[in-house]
Image (cartoon, rainbow, N blue to C red; front, side):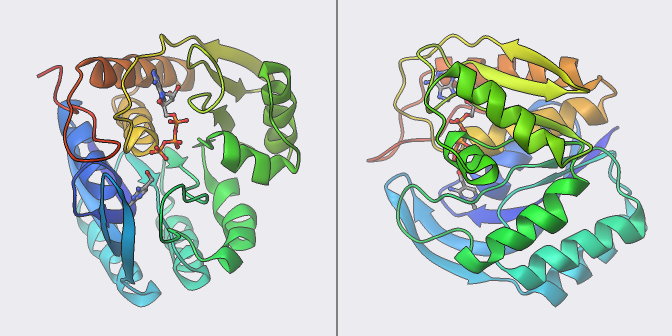
Length: 259
Ligand SMILES: Nc1ncnc2c1ncn2[C@@H]1O[C@H](COP(=O)(O)OP(=O)(O)OP(=O)(O)O)[C@@H](O)[C@H]1O
Ligand SMILES: Cc1ncc(CO)c(N)n1
């Protein structure tokens, strides 16, 4: 059985973070492991509290995982402070981790920040370059490229600018921009569009976490980068289309729609 590790924050309401990651990995029939960077108190209406696990304890969890059950892929989500980011980067190097997917969870849309603002530079300079692929949404991509992204041409320019400083691939998610939900991959100097059917479902809590975990699961299963992104795109569209409707706000997806 292939093994995948998520390093991320817990979402007690089960739609995003560690919980979304484990459900996604399980739906892909890979063995899921989790290093928890922070607990969050959140639900479909917003984020109300964050309790950091602390860098040392994150490091200890990573030691336990890597020394015993070496993951075939690693997904990194919420990392709230500078010390934790540095610890994760050091441990990934120490253990020579493979197939690293970094979802830069930087811009909080509702309530408490998931990342301390002073940690952004460290995330950009230390962790993003370690990714085999990074998966910013439009507001995150704007922070990374330094200009506004208003259309698909801007998406291409941004992907190129962001990718210039990285050895890995860049997937800019169009969920916040395009009428159709098209994502753009910049991989080995080439652009590739993943055309998505826009699902008329306001329940999109955790789509980013779910997509990045699906990519990591596919990489662990041995698919190449382009195929992994396509398979993950098909999975997220299916999970949205299932039409689960829970909670007062933007609800979770049905991660198990295909089981
Ligand atoms: N209404 C929709 N219909 C179809 N696909 C969607 C829709 N909304 C988002 N997606 C897709 O979901 C994936 C995640 O994109 P999105 O831009 O929502 O990420 P995100 O903002 O990081 O997510 P999160 O809400 O977890 O922070 C992308 O593949 C995107 O195209
Ligand atoms: C723990 C966690 N990670 C990521 C996100 C972004 O969806 C969230 N809401 N919560």
